[in-house]
Image (tube, rainbow, N blue to C red; front, side, top):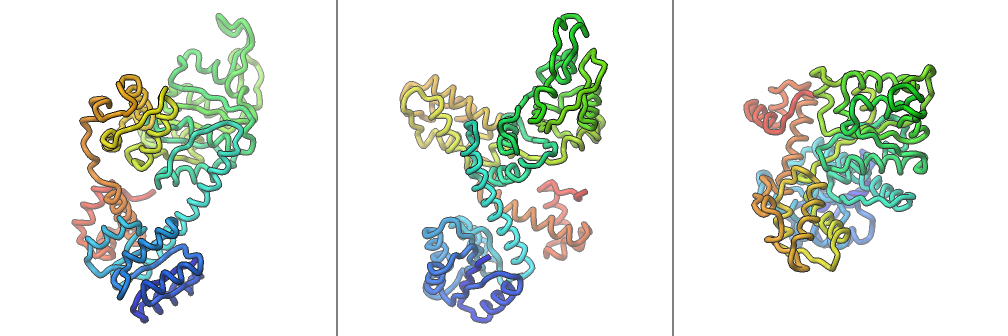
Length: 443
């Protein structure tokens, strides 16, 4: 990684530069803001380490000008100890993180590792966008927020594998869309994609629907029927709402997945089926497996690879683009959205996620009197919505703090007294923060 260090302290520049060069990074060093901008214009810089207080241009000003030239550049601001307000302001300007003086080199290295991972995710996402654009079927993917970028990067990496995938997320987050995306990005996008809604088919008919039946096997079976497994041969079988399967059907599905063979209802021979299974659920299958309401062996068979879809309230940055998308799709005349209306949509919590937002836009377009949608045109529950408890910046800071806690606990073998000492806080504060973020010991 090409790293630019801007600091008027020569000793600090030498310390950080030598440390980073020994770890394989190329370092450019500047004694002030003007020199930093000159070097930035001469060489591709992926990360800038900026001292907040420098003579001439401050770190804030340097960061602002760098972002104007290249919005993709990453930056870590180095601030004086205890300047919390400064840390908040530099992150609003676009800094990825901040460090207090004296710089903890191990923490710096951890932050650089995290940023390298984020850059790799961004590269994966670019590849994903190109692949989707070349896919044989149109597929709308709207999501530039960090949560969705991470999710789409993961989808891109697992799509080529033959292993089962479990997609988990709340109702309305787009699990079917992600399942289709995995199929389209797989080895053969023209192979069958067969969907089964496990919650919509009566249990008495489910075995026949999944495995097929022979003619005369039961009343009404007047012809042979190929089940969904056979229909999906060579392609993808998508089991939606898999958490709704009864215990008996779970056993039969497990056998089919283990042996890659099925037997039609009323049939006397096994049929080999080679399919990739992608399952989806809005339920916590691990908790169900632990409580005995879902077979643990089936859970592990389905969850070879997993995709966690974030709820819309955790990716609010995507709401404006989603609104524009739904307006373009459903508006019967040119329609605009008033700023106050968008503000109300940004505040709402969306228990039904993207699907609920889609329905809100459909309803509003239908009932609105004019071509400019006002706040008064929105449903009552949206207009009454309170602002989110935490803004995007606070969520980001909380995420950083949570990762710091987990890192300290891991390095201390989850001995809380040692972790608290490592973090420089009391054990009581550590326990409070563990409760706040729902942190439990990793398996």
